[in-house]
Length: 323
Image (tube, rainbow, N blue to C red; front, side, top):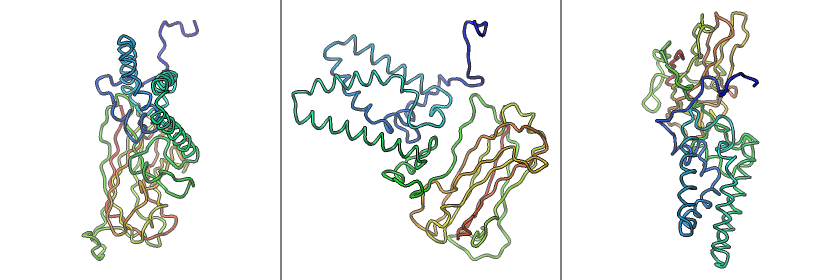
C-alpha cells in the first residue's frame, strides 16, 4: 500500500550473479568465510549423516535447503556483504545449526570421551569466535578485506596497534561496465642511483614525508553514472625492517576551492614484513563515487609521516569509468 507495487526492490542497482556464485570464498575464504570465522558450523554439519540414518526424507529436505541457501548467498554481487564480522547473511538461520548441534550432542551422550572432546571443541570454537569479535571491534582485523596473510598475522593479537595490516581490494559494482580513462605511471629513471636488489630506478623516501604522487584533472566526473574504479600497482623495498609500516596510500579528489569531494587512505603494507631489502609488489583496487561537482583533481600519493627508510620503484595507476 505504501509503494503501490506488488513487489518492491529496495537495493537499487544491485543484484545476483546466478551463473557465478562464490561458494568457495563464502565458505572457506579468509575474507569472510563462514566456516573460517564461525567454525562451530562445521560441528553442526556432522549431524547430517545421523539424520540420514534416522530419516532420509528429513536429510534430503534439510540438505536441499542448505545447498540452496548457500547458493543464493554466494550469488549476491557483493558476496562478502560489506563491512561486518564473518558471513552475516547466515545469522538468521543459526537456529538450524543449533538444531544440528543438539542432534550431534544427543547421539554421543553416552560416549563420554567423544562427548567431552566435542564439548571442548564447542567451547573452543565459541571462545575463538568471541575473541575474533573483540578483534573486529578493536579494528585489529579488517571488517571487509581480510586475507590469509592478514588472518595469520593477526591471529591471537590483542592490542590494536600490535600488528598493522593494510591494502585495499574493492570489487566492481554490480554489472558494471568499465572504460579505461587513464593509464599512467611514474618514471624514476635518470637519478644515477646505486643498484639495489637489481633495481636502479626508484624513489628513496628516507627522511621525506612526501614524494611519489600522481595527479590528474577530473573535469566532468559529476556526469558519470556510477563513478570510477581505481587500480594501483607499486613495488616497495624497506631499508630497515618494517620501516614502511606506517606509510599510507592516500587517494583524494578535490574541487577547485581545495575542498575534498572524496578522501580515503590505507596502509601500503598488507602485513608486516619478515625481511628487509626485498622488493614487494602490492596491488590495490578502490571504488571512487560520483563527484558532487565538476573541475576536480584526483591525487594519489604515498605519505611517509615517520620519514622512514624505504624505496618505491614502481608506481602505476589505471582509472576506469563505471557505467
